[in-house]
Amino acid sequence: MYNSEMNEIDYLSSILDKIIDDNLDSFKENNSFQVRPGYSYDNFYLDRVQGAYEGSLNGLIHHIMFEDGIYKNILTDEQFERCKKAVDEEPEGIWLDNSTSEDHIPDDSLVDELEDIYAQVIEHVCIRLNNEGFKVEELDDFCEDF
Image (cartoon, rainbow, N blue to C red; front, side, top):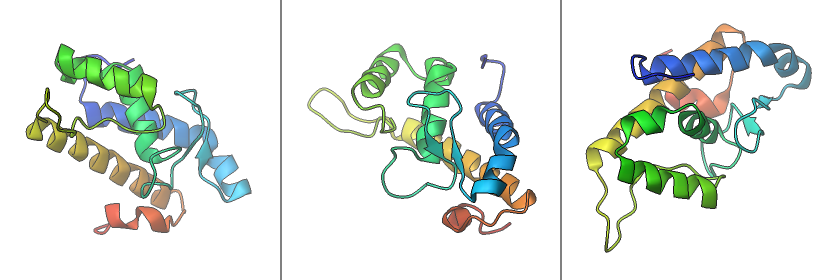
């Protein structure tokens, strides 16, 4: 479980490394990067990072951040309540706190921080899968330099 002494990206990368380790044989046998790691609706694809968030790697990262306490650590209480509401009402989405309303103006630095976390963790997954001998075209944009 995550604690505030940990680096968020390192923690997420280690969780995803374990998920990859647990599913390597399945990836090879089925030529699919589908995983059922026990988070939220328990059906994600490590090679989906574009388009809808449902079942995507972005969605898995989001649910790990929520369920393992990363959001609780990096968000204010008010932000966390908005995040929790989004998770409860739209579990197939992700929360970036970038919606503007009469009562809320997004915190651009938080949005940037969250987007950076997603990008670095997706890059880690791409590199890890490449190191395991997989070429995942949809992740190429995140691993341009690899």
